View 1 (spheres, rainbow, N blue to C red):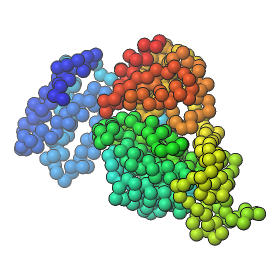
View 2 (view 1 turned 120 degrees about the vertical axis):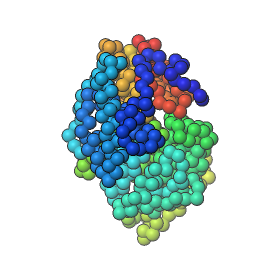
View 3 (view 1 turned 135 degrees about the horizontal axis):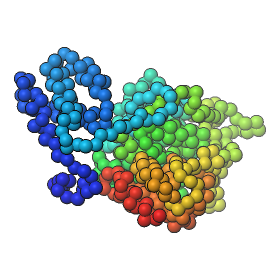
View 4 (view 1 turned 90 degrees about the vertical axis):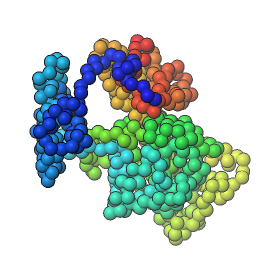
Length: 492
């Protein structure tokens, strides 16, 4: 909006020191016969060299990288190395900066790591779940920011039995995924908020059919087209309630880029083993963020049990497609299996037989049964754990999704000051873990920071009757640690 952060109060509380990077870059390259425009391209190397000095880091690996990348272009290679060194020397010789820092190595489990982005991690989680379950995966999707990278990534892995289909619109995309699931495949569709609105009727069909389906929503600023390239936790209410009729679905969210792998894997497990569509929530900040990810061992991944109906039970004359087990789960019968012919569609089903039914008492029974099946999932998910802090105290900061890093850092700083603050972060949002209510009741205050106008807080108040407080920032950017610390202190 034309605001210069150097001239307003944006940087209050920070020590701001101006550096004429352009001038010093050109000075470092004054005897190299390159044009000014070409010399200025090396400015980022000056800043990088200075940061190496400030944080006491060795430049050896970066210099080796530059020589490897630009080995066939010696002038470019020399200019980058020279400017990198100039930035380091500037920190060493100037008296402007009196403080240097040392960042200790992160304490990480032994293993093989790589840097991974959220959408990439999500794609790999889907592939892993497909392989572990033995189900070939079908992605029916339509391009939309910020979810399109999932399609791009998955399309590279046909060797794993992955089929990707770019449909003509959002409705066709989800309908094709439903068809794949009905045919015994792992049906997945990906989108963002506007696409979720278009998919709503078909999602209701999947609930009525009671078949596995994973619906990925990489959230962005809304409503309507909104802020396509900005992050927002915009669609939790939509995930909970955004379909016609009584239409419950499990809702799972990821908290970091690397967490997308295990969280979407869990979404597949629940979808397949409980015969239900599942909504998986990410957002633009997670999707485009990156962090180290430890390669998991295939043997360590949870089992995903798939139980296809292959024959009639003893005493059955025909398939009873809505006959349920102890988890209220109906059988998964693949079309074409001899003797297992049955009716499908969006009209209400008669309990057990699956015939079309307009009976009023049956409709109420089926609505209650579908809800009971979702509620029952709470028996098969882990109990909620505190991310940090005591199990009882003054303030619990409860979060979900991409607020994880901010909350973790803010709470840690306050704990280091000796303050009674704890942090819990939700992966399972519908149903909630069975012990969540007990955790909430152990704190004087519950603060729920969200990048929306207060969606989780409404659900928490509704389910647990607790006087939770919200902190809401809806600017298309993440909540900062400083902002959150200031808010938490109001309740201490």
